[in-house]
Length: 580
Image 1 (cartoon, rainbow, N blue to C red):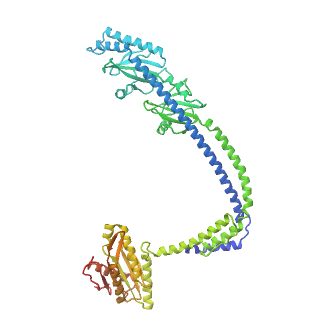
Image 2: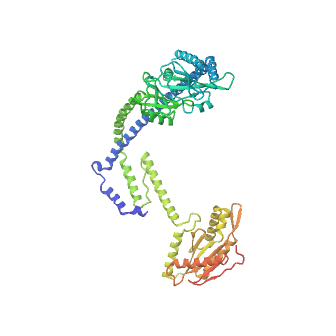
Image 3: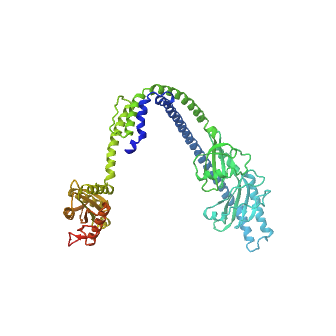
C-alpha cells in the first residue's frame, strides 16, 4: 500500500474540499452532463449500426443462397448439354458409314507408306467427309466434324472453309481416353468466329471388337449454352452467368451474347474466386461495375462458372434503410440526451460521497465504508465498493502472507527466513542473545521423485514441514531454504540445546511413517548445526558453517547430525549404523 500513500494522492481530498463548485466545463457536474449525452449517442449509433450490419448479413446470405442455386442450375444444365453432345458424338461415330469406310481405308493402306494412298482408298475418306458435312449442315452447334487416325492426324473433315485447319487437341487427350470413353479439350477462339469452341472426341472401334480404328472429333460452339445459362437466372433481373476457362478468363457471358471475345480482365479475380468456390465475393467486373458473385468449377470439364449480380440493385433497399436508421438515431439521441441531462443532476451528491471514499482508499485507508442512501444503481455501486474495499483489505493480508510464506509447505520462504536470521543476529549483537541454526536436507529425495513422482515428493515436503512446526517453539523459525532443504533458527538457544532439538527433530522424522496414497515411505534427514560466535559478522558465515556440516553429514552416511562449533571444526554428534 506504499504506492497509495504517495504525496500526490493526498492532494485530491484537499482539492475537493476547497473547490466544491467549479464553474464551466471544469465542473464535475457539467462533465457528467456532457458525457451523459455522449454515452447516450454511442449506444444509439451502435444499435443503428448493429441493425444495419444484421440486415446486411441477412441480405448477403439471401443473395448468396440465390446465387448458389443459380450456380447449381447452370452447372447442371451445362453438364446436361455436354452429355447431349457426347451422346451425339457416340451416335455419329458408330454410324456404319464411318465404321465401314474407315475400316476399308485402313485395310487398303495397311502395307503402304503414309501419303501414298491409292485413289480407291481415298474414296473411302471422301464418303466419310460427305457424311460429316451432311451432319454439320444439320447441326449448327458444330463448327467442324473430323475423323482422326490413331496419332491425331486428320483423315476426313466436314466441308468448311477451314477444314484443313489443325485440330486443337488437348495435350493429355490420349491419357483422357485411357480413363474415360471420351476426351475434352480446352476452350479457344478462332478468327472470324464469335463463339468460343471446344473439342470433344471419342475413339472409333471395329464392330464387336476392341480394335481401335481412329477417333471421331467435333468442334462444338459453346454459344449453344447461352439459353441454358440464362435459364439459371430466373428471378434475377441483374444477374449474369459467365463461362470461364481454367485461368479464369471469360469465354461466354449472358450479359453480352452478341460478342463472345476472350478477355483477361476477369483473370486474377477469377482465380481468387475459384480458390473459394460457392462463397460470395464483392468485386469490380470487366465492365467496371461493382457486383457480388461466386464461382464454381466443373469436375469433368476444363471450365468454371461465375454468377454475379449488380451490387447497387441487390442492396438498394438496405442502403435506403441505412439512411433512415441514421435519421432516426439522430432524433433519438436528442430525446434521450435531454432526458439524461435532467437525470444526471441527481447523480452528483452520491457520486461525491463515493468519490471521497475512493480517495481515502487511494490514500491508504482501507477502513472506509460509504453510507448507502439510494436504492438504485449508485446504491448498488456503493455497496459493491464497500465489498471491494473489504476484499482489498483481505487480499492485502493474503499478499503479505504470500510474500513471506512458501506456498507448498506453509513455512517461511527463503526471503523471510533470511530476514528472521538478520533479526536474530541483530538481537545477538545488541542483547547477547544466543541462537543456533539448523540446515536440514532430506536424504535421497531425488530417488523419491524419480520413483514415485513429484507429487509424492511434494507430500513428503508437506509432512516434514508439519513435523518441524510441531517440534519448534514460538521463538523459533523454520523455512524452506530451497528444494528439499529446510532452514531452522532456534532462538535463545546455545549449541548444546540446539543439538538436543536437532536430535529430537531427526528422531521424529526417522520414526514418522510418510504416506502417499497407498504407499508408506521411510524418510530420514541429515542436519548441519552451528551456533552464533563472536567472530561472525553476519548470518551468512553461520549458513556457510551449517552447510559444511550438512555436507559432512551426507558424506558420513546420512541420517545424522553434524555440528560445526566454529568456522573450522566439524564433528559428528549422532552416528547411525544403518543409514537409509
